[in-house]
Image 1 (cartoon, rainbow, N blue to C red):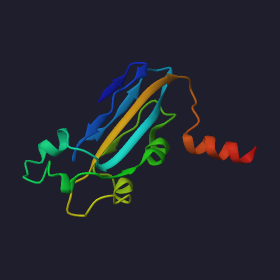
Image 2: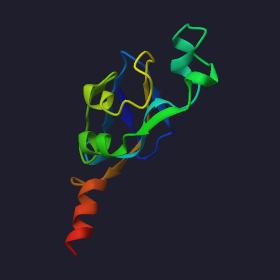
Image 3: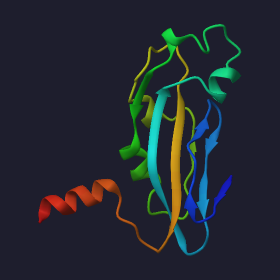
Image 4: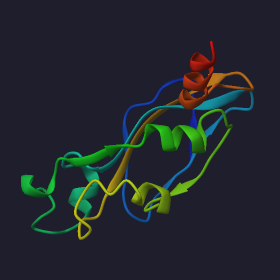
Length: 128
């Protein structure tokens, strides 16, 4: 589990069977800034696969932007939990089914009890 110290986090990679579990301080909430699911590039998770294909460029570069999904699950909350693989993330299907996909996410904690998610901001803007 990671405790978020106010400020921007670097992009973190979560492999299969790992847990993305951000947690903010008492007076802060999570804000998801970037979320990618798939195999965008070689990294810690591809090295952990222990496969000859892990860093082959033919098996990299497939990914989906899942910011909206993670935003809805985590933004505005003090903590959240997401096990990889996640059935909602699997719906994105950015890569061939035989490839393991990974989550890359950047988040921060901001002071406040309520935070509008990106989806809520879009709905609010449409209503104006």
